[in-house]
Image (cartoon, rainbow, N blue to C red; front, top):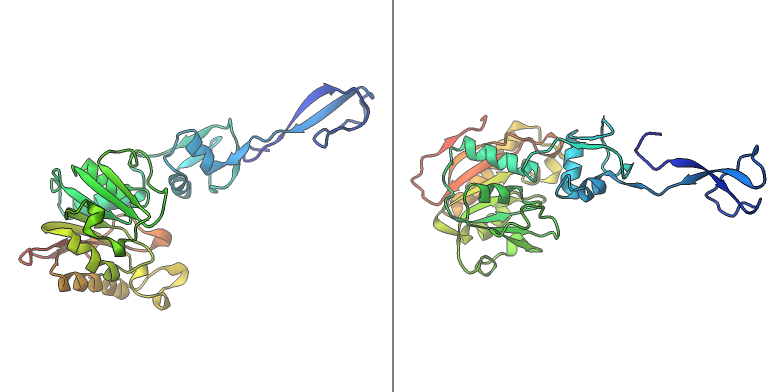
Length: 298
């Protein structure tokens, strides 16, 4: 049996009785009454995603699951496909990882590059709405933000090294639709980034954008699968119609415009969303004179 589960180890033991005193022992028929060959099951199996965390190879179970889904984890030289697969503790594990805690970081990095926003973060304060494991927060502090408020309705999701970074304030258990300045030390932020699921941006931008300084900026990720309505989703929750995708982005841009913000740039994410959904970023400025430009295919 391969190292995907515990296996029996065979040992020769001497028994003081012919009676089988343990359900774990298998007695051989060709052994004497005082000598037996025992096959002892050893409880050495653990879920693969847990073992990766316990060995310090990944920051969190969600990160482990993400890497496994991407085919970036090998167990005894074989590509792993199931996070819950039981594996033995001493098995060889290989992880092809990068310094970012999640794919979300790669998404935001791509958006910043496409929108030509290098150098826009010098010692600013930022709000990361829908922080999850902290990919966006990690990018913000690496780009120079002095403080990032990582807000998420869930608990225990922020991964290391983001969780222990003194520049990141963990605001777990907070619903983004209920945020106030008191959650941000009573001071508006310079930057807003948002990566939200199961809720439309049009429902939360009226709460989030007023928390940004008038001269601030926002980079929000539009997920059409949460903007167009469940009845208009395709198979597996994927929005395949380019017209619906454009409609989703336009609705977010229109909502921001009603709040006094203009889309300076908009474009598709370099990294696809779950199950292949195409997602988009919109860079917003409160300055209505900013020249708009677009990288979207419409």
